[in-house]
Length: 222
View 1 (cartoon, rainbow, N blue to C red):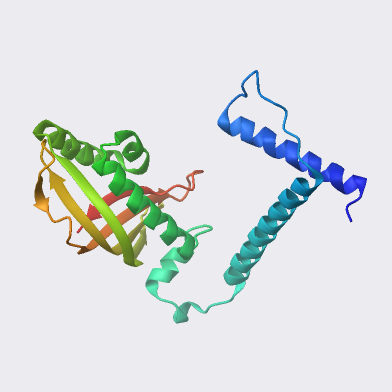
View 2 (cartoon, rainbow, N blue to C red):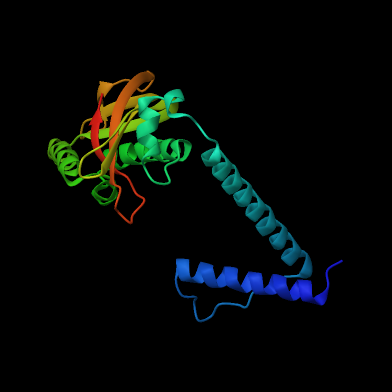
């Protein structure tokens, strides 16, 4: 049974959520209707927030416990020794993000979305991508990639330069359907019914002194 105080707390939480949404999505229309939540709806929202909070806390505790497990240097590889020198680095989190960047970059490249590419790539790599995109547009070509799945995503190399820049190379093995169409939409390269097994090695960099946690893609090789 919820008390009046409990309901008040829930309503405060709801107000904070709507304020957060408004700041993210923009100002409200002047004719916007006031939204009122019933006690049942407030309880459901509270349970959702509580469950998510507990899940995040459990993940945080698990990550801290993993970091606290003592491991003798002689028991780990040279690769892992290097990764341990990167502040707050988590291999699983990094690989999940790298896989996401792989898909976003591939999609943006095919769609000629240079704004997205510029945010993800180093200036040198972005210039190469842009040159290919410009040439395709001049030739009236259109590339399409139907990404199926990752068979593997593994860190195969890591190093930290003298100027404290971390470089991590990830080997991706994925299944894709790649085709190239001409200006009339005719397939001139690839096969819509053929799934390719493709291996790529992408390298990401980040300055250890940087306040940004983002890694920049600097190299893509097959």
